[in-house]
Each structure stands twice: as C-alpha cells, then as structure tokens.
Image (cartoon, rainbow, N blue to C red):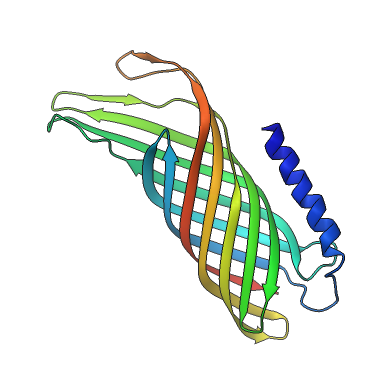
Length: 216
C-alpha cells in the first residue's frame, strides 16, 4: 500500500514539473466523460465477467493544456460460475463495487481526435462479494465484509471530437482500462453457520468501454 501511494505521489509531481513545458493559453478545457462496457476481473485465479460504468471530470493542471487532474467514480459488477460435478448443484459468485478516486490525464490533441492517457487510483465506498451454492433442497450463501479495496491503473482513450462552438464540443470513442487491485476482507460465517477466515490479496481488472464526453 505504501509503495502504491509513493508511486502516485511521484507521478503527480513528475507530471507537475513536465507540464510547465507545455502550458499555454490555448487548448485548456474542462473535460467530462461517461463510459461503460465489458469488464473482466480476475480474483483468486477466477475470472468474473460483467460490466463497468465510469464517470470522470478533468481540469487543466497548473495552467497546462496537456496535463489534467480530476475526480472519478466507477461501478463494477461481475459474476463467476464455478463448474460443478453434480448437475443438481450450482455455484454463483457475484462481485460489485462502487469506487471514487483521483484521475490524472495526459492529452495529445488533434483537430479531430483526443488521445488521452489516464492514470488513476480509486478506493471503494461499497462492496459486495456474494458466493452462493444452490441445491434442490437449500441455498447456502457466504459474503465476507470487505474492509479495504483499492484500484490503481491506467486508461487509454481515443476520442473523436465534434466542435459545437468556440471552445466547446463533444467526445465519443473507444476506451480501455487496466487496473491492479488489492482487497482485504474479514472473517465471515455463511448461512449454514460455517466459519471462514478472512484474508487479503491482489487482483486484476480490465475493461473495454465506449466513452462519450464534453469539453468546455
């Protein structure tokens, strides 16, 4: 966790220094994005498949037209169904999380296209990790309480631009995100009274999204 924080701080101050060479009076904009699409989350070597929704707002950093900083919120929802040797027993794992965090942006602007590199770090406000076993006679559920959940990664956006008037316009195009994550969860008891130990560990997530946005 400390290494992650130091890495983010290092990136932040590096971009601040770098941005001084690129600042200027033209091209500065506030950017607002909404994005959604397909996501794959790998937790404990199992692939959860689902969808992701993201919203971000980026502001020019230190007067720069190329470097931005802002805030974001994202929601991930994915599920995994382990195979069963008994046709009458099914297993379902459901994971969802709501996160907020800090976004950085490095822009390469063309008259018709924005290429945006978007490092970020997010922390969860809400998580569910529900594991269900269904049989013909009963249902057994287990849902450990998640203490900490953090995502850190990078997004890459290729966004076409349509100018509406001077300095204002809309974006649309594909985006891809890759995140590392770290999760800490408590001991828990399932619906049948069985006890499970808590734990912690890393996981990964990638998303392929379609993004729309606006600049002004």
